[in-house]
Image 1 (cartoon, rainbow, N blue to C red):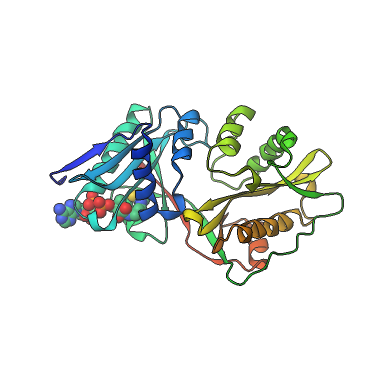
Image 2: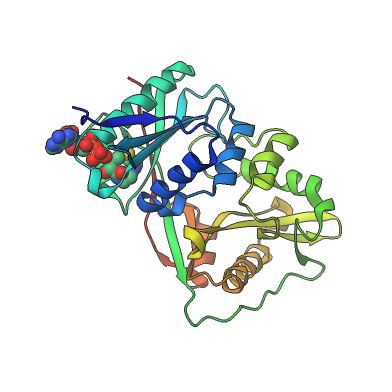
Length: 310
Ligand SMILES: CC(C)(COP(=O)(O)OP(=O)(O)OC[C@H]1O[C@@H](n2cnc3c(N)ncnc32)[C@H](O)[C@@H]1OP(=O)(O)O)[C@@H](O)C(=O)NCCC(=O)NCCS
């Protein structure tokens, strides 16, 4: 039963309402909070994306979104769905109402199912979905490195390789795309990751507001990008999160990824973050070994569940 006084409000492109989405996300799933500028930019690569704010007696108490899974083929039968309800407003049917809205919206955009990100730190979300016919689809092992008292680590690139960023050397963009095509193809995900055209990738992964261009850390040899590590500030400055670290096939096994990760840690220290987080595919032994060597400790798992759109 939906509580009396509940309204599901479409924030559209209204900045004040999108700020409410950001605030509820920060209160419930802080690591996935995105600035309003990013929430607006998302429409550029997913025009059919819709969001709803759960408003109870005039107060925003939850949110949901339903759109495309950016990194899978466009005809994948699942929609990307996020939802959460603030703790004080739970167990009144609001989560169920939001989930039902996402499932209906998914059908409207031609999807038979929905895929929902969860965290092992929030087992109530996983249990809620499992009770509604959802099952785990993928799991990434989270790791985190506390930065208190740390100083910037030395970054030692192999001979002939320099550390730079796309902000410092925008001319590397085409080569960065070529490197990312190779790196994304090698991600140990359950389904092939679709990077899209250069324009799509650029709009989504590089230009999207809220992702600083100096956080696209690059290892370059001459005018060739040989490795990349993308980092973003999360949790309103508390955390720097790795979005991806990868190295071109020909350059693997020479310490490029380790050097990029060290550079990312220095980037986080410079910005006053409290810790660095990353997620690794459970079987990604090389990256897990690098993170362990750098002192990362186990954190919460990123768990995706899939369920029907009915
Ligand atoms: C998962 C989440 C969205 C559920 O939100 P919610 O508003 O508590 O969801 P509901 O109230 O619809 O359902 C929760 C339980 O309360 C029960 N409930 C609903 N109305 C109730 C009422 N009036 N009185 C008592 N219990 C009630 C529901 O039956 C449900 O139990 P069930 O799962 O055994 O059926 C919320 O816990 C959350 O935000 N978690 C963190 C975010 C997260 O993990 N999101 C990803 C997964 S959805």
